[in-house]
Amino acid sequence: QVQLVESGGGSVQAGGSLRLSCAPSVYTYRRYCMGWFRQAPGKEREGVAGFDSDARTRYAPSVKGRFTISQDNAKNTLYLEMNSLKPEDTAMYYCAADPIPCLYDDTLVAAAYTYWGQGTQVTVSS
Image (cartoon, rainbow, N blue to C red; front, side):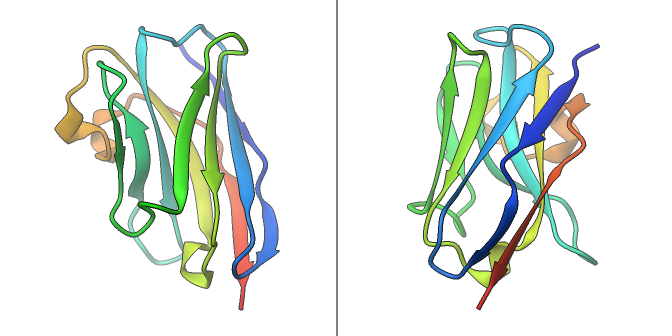
């Protein structure tokens, strides 16, 4: 069982920045694929960014160029740096993990992940 704890959410104005963190209960480097997802009220959960088994990154078109996913292997922490935030980025953000191997095409597919955090709220005001 893997537990994931997200932090770093909050309320910002449009154009602002936030950095989300995800701390897994087990060491994940080269053992788990990791991803960030988000879900707004009344909408389906959508993939935002993730790493596949080969540590290749993939981003949703709506966040590419604004968000950056990264891992600090020494701290065993996953990050999501979010810049130029827009009101439409408002959602609950979730960290997810799945044991390797995992395909690049599944990086942003929620059903491909086994473990989920409890989420952290991001609210962007105009």
